[in-house]
Image 1 (cartoon, rainbow, N blue to C red):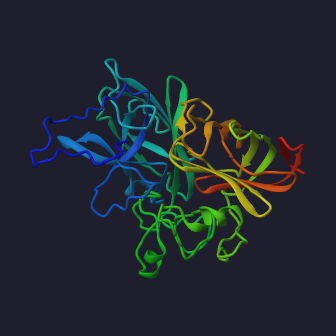
Image 2: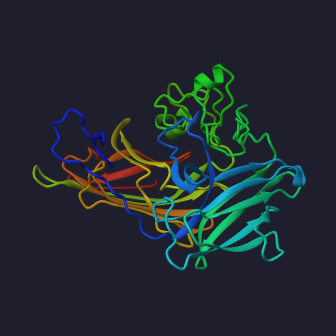
Image 3: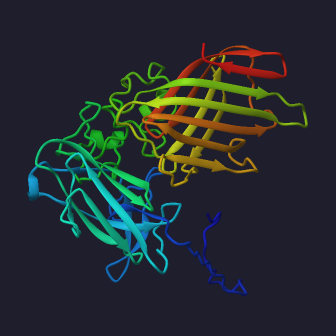
Length: 394
């Protein structure tokens, strides 16, 4: 990340010409993208376009996680690009021998092309260049949903949820998941201005009813899924925020918070061990979403850590994401882990240290963990001996 604009002065005061070269490592997996025009694209912290080869030059592509295909049989099909990517999800060269990708369609999703095995549910392709291959998908002609799983070396790398039908509104608030009808969920997130002007757009908080689509910080995540309202929909200014619906409600199974209070020249040390469940059908992508950890004590937020798309996908068969920074530059966090254990059960471990990290004592406290649109909250009971604090579920 360049901290200042990268430019060459033209007033003669620079004795040299600087050049910035970025070299990618070989691709390690693949994912689905759609070519998109920058014209009319609304950039937010939640959305990132990536450059890719195409059309005799470079094009911009948008990563796809949720897709809508009309349930009309072969009448409407969707063609996307399957591109090789590195560990950070950027389009990369696949190396000399190329990279072999296995595709598995479920729930009636049909792989129309390429079709080298006469089976619409599976396909194996070799990505020989960074240009990847075009992939065409179709529906089974009935309403419902399915998925497309992308694997490499026998390990699942990426999955795309596919819904069949044009008007899907998961939270029933009148704003469609794919409200702009592009077929891609999340390529143009709503603001309250869009709603007032009746401008087609995608629900910015698709699993929590928020008909007004307020997004005060304009980050692409609606207020009802972002910040205070996500932690407590009953707090002031959150009247329209319904409780999370299908795919959005989550709950803690275990919480352990340990704080060792330092001295004037020694940092506080915070350790948090969590175990939580996602509702059936819900998914998280910490490497592409904002992950916020918050501890509230005596009705005052004592500690907040905001990791905005800073986790790295470790490319494991079971989703596993890690953040590591020994210098603890972001809110004192040295390392954090979010990993799938089984089914919809996850664990999360956090380590942080800093001078005056937080003020936490005995009594009631609350912890909130927000990953994109999904929020986990729990009330805690804390014990303290003055130098050490320990909090757990009641």
